[in-house]
Length: 483
Image (tube, rainbow, N blue to C red; front, top):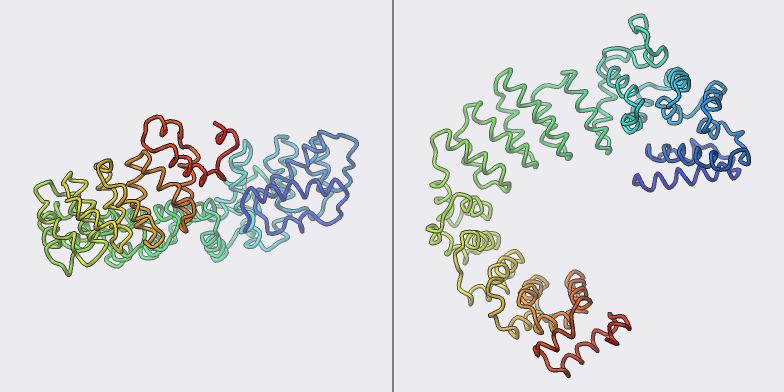
């Protein structure tokens, strides 16, 4: 699937090819591309014809349908028996009233000649994209009305502005509407997914359990929020549904799980909030603590029980405890620095740092070599406040290729925090580091380094700086080297 920018580039190329004499159908060349390709084709074609005027022939109906003169566009609509729906749809938002009205009548005939479900499914992303134009909201309103079952889309497009009660035979059946909306909800275009979800919810044809299932599995956060709000509104009106609540709680989305935790109270299951105090999301943990407090429970006591049980404690439990703990709770956290789970060790380090509690430097230096990358990262963050006092040789030794990438990264971060010639030596040594990210960081630091300042401050001998500069020469410009 192409991006919008690639679609637009291809649409402009097709327009230029048409005016150079390409005889292949435009619809065939743009088939499979998104709305932006057709919009770019229309704009490019109009711009080229406006710029070159009569020097460019416009016998092709595709070119005439995009002509700068509204009379030419209207005549093209009248002459073409089976125009591309996409170009006609663009003309439905035309700035000339006569072109707009004729395009809407032509579109009604064209849609009627196709399978309505197929045509509307393909046109919906286009309709939504054009909806932002001055006259583009009309098609969005008609599409929403047809998919909601209020009146026939075909009738509205065939006779714009006239009552549609006499055209009810052309209305989409409920089965057709459900089939179209199901296809639109499954498309990759986010605007289309959200539009289809809004229409589905407004029609009220989805039960609370089905809405909960869709909320729990929806990858788009905005669409998932629409389903979640619908579930909560339905349970507020009709009473709780345990199956729907459990479905929300099992979602991968933090917002949906948080809504499920909140719904536990109305369902009379507030005691289940303890199951979510160690959730991976801070939003869900906060909802669980609030609910437990409303039910008379004590989140702090439950966290303490988790931290003192080596089989139940987890990194998220430690993080949750940090959110309710104070400096006096350090004795509960320090033993976790030796827990066999790296996630627990890293969370304990982060909690101690967040509480302003100091961990001994030898232990932190040893944790730079921890097999867990998150532990090494947290240890480096704890040591940054004292980076200037650390032994640069010991840190530089941990940047060698024999160490894991996360250890090299943590040591390099501390050398950056220390600054001076120690950082410069590490940067030059790591120019060829096998980790692409570290090599890029080192090159960026060398390129911006103030070599004269380092020499003036006496942090390194001139001979050593010369050797470092020689190793970095391939990165620097001639002017930098001469200076």
